[in-house]
Length: 80
Image (cartoon, rainbow, N blue to C red; front, top):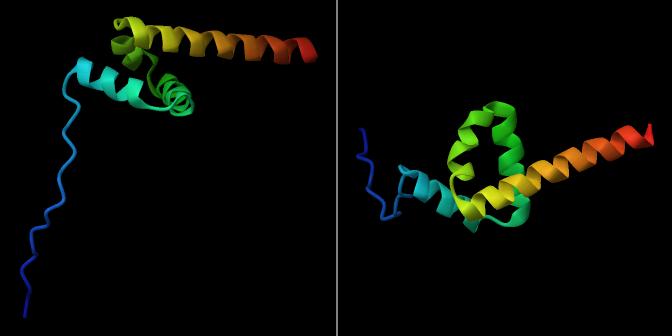
């Protein structure tokens, strides 16, 4: 005998349909998560971060992340 699945009252997470929603979600992340997100997206598809470049606060975080990456690579090169 088959049982019918019960409906749960778990609210669903709204989809991030607009760039404004994506930026708001990104800015709500902790700095460590923001850095991880940027690194992951850059390795998958760098053009996917265009929506962050268009937002003043998010673009600041993105530029800072890119600068830290360049400095890190430069320091690694100098140590060799």
